[in-house]
Picture 1 (spheres, protein in one colour):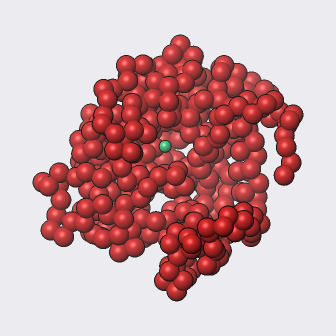
Picture 2 (cartoon, rainbow, N blue to C red; picture 1 turned 30 degrees about the vertical axis):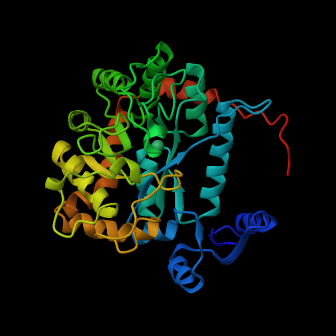
Length: 393
Ligand SMILES: [Zn+2]
């Protein structure tokens, strides 16, 4: 019998999951928890064999002094009858809007000015974002995303798409399969048009997950336009040599253009740290890995260019317990321990404390290069997801 602790703040979702799980003969729910703060105590009391946990909790984020959040949606791109990948993005955006309106502690931020006014009201500023451009089949689709509120797009994701090449061997690496060479596919003609349209609209461009060729092409397009770009979540290639991770040279190039790099918490992309970059008491496969990758990227690009890349709820494995974070990096509840560890290992707290404001300054620069006529044109193009063939359960 597998004993499960179920942690989810929405009672209806929690109840539905519990009902589904208990229909399976092998599972028993030993505890249900509706907030991040109670998870550890209930887990210690009930000793489950598995934790089914929503890793992002807004109260935890506030406690950890996180204020600006890239609220990245990862839409299912398998096409359902009557609904395209783009439609799936638009449906998820409606759900994100509903989430924001249900949660007074969160504010929707569709420009840097709106983000600052959310912060002034004590709210978390959520920047609507989409991971992967698989839903885009024309430049008009970028307009539809913009009209629906998307302000940041990770252009490539797990596989090559109509927009270009993704970093090689991403799934294989997580399963320990041997590396293959880098992907030679760069941006397609459509991918280049999409990136140009994003810049016209003032959408932030994210090179995370892109092949080296595609990432360099995006950077060249952005540099020509004077627009900074992001690599929202990556480890240091110098430590874990996979195309998915950022090289020192690219991190420095992104920083020179006014961009930022987020350090990922995805275990497999930060799992190796050379002995010379460890310290006495270094805990392998713990948050020390993340601290070492963060410190290395800060050396390569400057501490001000590095932020938390997280990837919570990205179905990613996390570094375990040990080292500087006694509970590991299970969820947003562990962010204060990560902050303390970063500060203890030499990352300047002034840079850590101002990363949200620097992201908003970056966004200011992206918006300054936008074309208001293009923005107005895109707003007029608002489209609604097809509801045909939806099955109500
Ligand atoms: Zn990702």
